[in-house]
Image 1 (cartoon, helix red, strand yellow):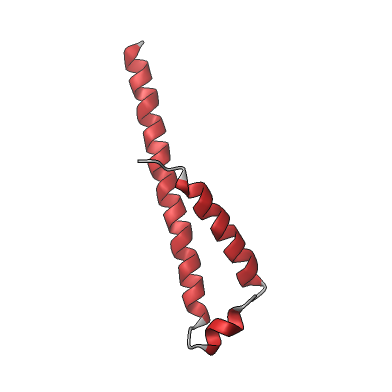
Image 2 (tube, rainbow, N blue to C red):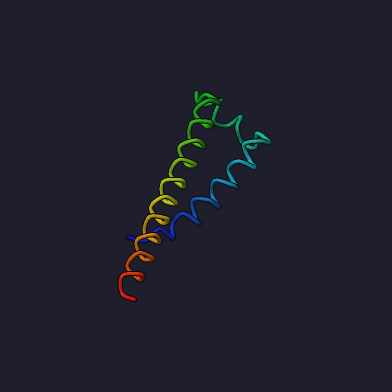
Length: 72
């Protein structure tokens, strides 16, 4: 499994956060019945996803370091 996708998630999250802070295009969605809280939850979910990928990447790096020490 590759954890490189987290960079793309992080970029999308940063762009979303910047637009959401300015409330860009928000009126289109709230006009169709969405609640502003749904966007906050989506942002939180994206941040959680990036954190989870980072944990897997860190764990893989630690395992690689451990295996390198065993081979020496």
